[in-house]
Image 1 (tube, rainbow, N blue to C red):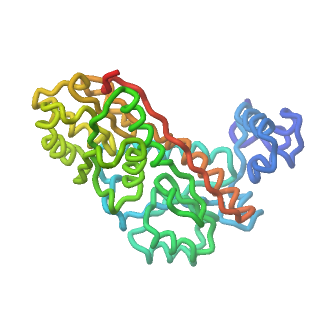
Image 2 (image 1 turned 60 degrees about the vertical axis):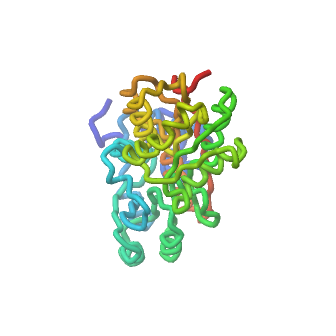
Image 3 (image 1 turned 90 degrees about the vertical axis):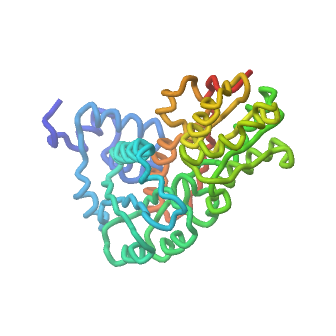
Length: 338
């Protein structure tokens, strides 16, 4: 392998038996190249240690060469990036973005916006060719982004936006998965524990998906605070109904809240899943510390953000609106009696 920076595009093309134009397209317009050739060129480039000059490529395109990773710190009912339990979530997303950017002639730049005016200021800053927006749910923010004239894609809990590019998770489907699993396990007396579902579209969709399987009038819905403390308070409320066999299963809006519920129930001597089944949502890694493996739902966030990079770069070249909604999957465990 040659020293870093010594390998050029022609050497990659020769070894892969493709043209230099094909190598260039793989990095600039991969959608114009057959997927098998994209894989071949990238594999060859890695083998040779080829690193394209992203700055020179940006000059040729008369662009900045930057994709902006935009994080909005305000305008949320709750800001989970500030909750230490979810720091791994955020770090995992950032690692995924940097990894995916390796196959494109763009660099990732981070930008935090504290207000709508911070977003609007991007119009005259000329610091990016496209924007990848982290987990935004507010229409006001999307409206501000539309005024910039810069391609952008909204990621993660963004399935409600109909006229802009999104790469999102299907929260309705996820809620439905939870209910179906419980129903198929023979559970007939459900409670659903959530928080901010009137203010947070993702939470509302998970609840609606759950209720699409169970008859609404047969489901006790508890809407309070999310997180361990909120879950603990909700768990306290259902101790007596569980002991009286009035509740046999619990769907919870996320794993962190489910942990609080579990603490409350096990502290009262309730056995899971013998007396009550429970399913969380998010597939948090630290639930491994529970005395049983929690049944949960995986959003495939790495796939969402990796795909979003590819889509937003495509939008630079063709100005299309891209919409991709990825279905989550149920992760089996021991917290449901089968």
